[in-house]
Image (cartoon, rainbow, N blue to C red):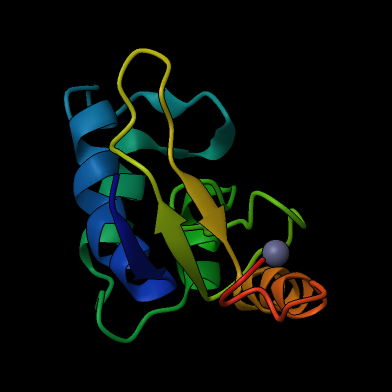
Length: 123
Ligand SMILES: [Zn+2]
């Protein structure tokens, strides 16, 4: 098991290469089936032109036509957030990590603190 903070910037940095891995082989003149205003070539060019250190997740979503490629959602409160703590292992067949936002981690700490013995010792 592992635990680390993942930020939306990390997701943005990897989104274009993940997108290219999935859709890089499609002919450039083929219309994108979920966003028929553009072709795959136009979409790939627009994504390649983004500065991944400064663009927003919204910039990316505007090009792709949906936010799914650069998004962090808390698995507990289901809110889109800028950062999560990712607990668990890389997904394989069925195992999965859990992404938790700062608010939910804070709530978890509050619940520990409400234990009769303070949670940190003695239980
Ligand atoms: Zn949350």
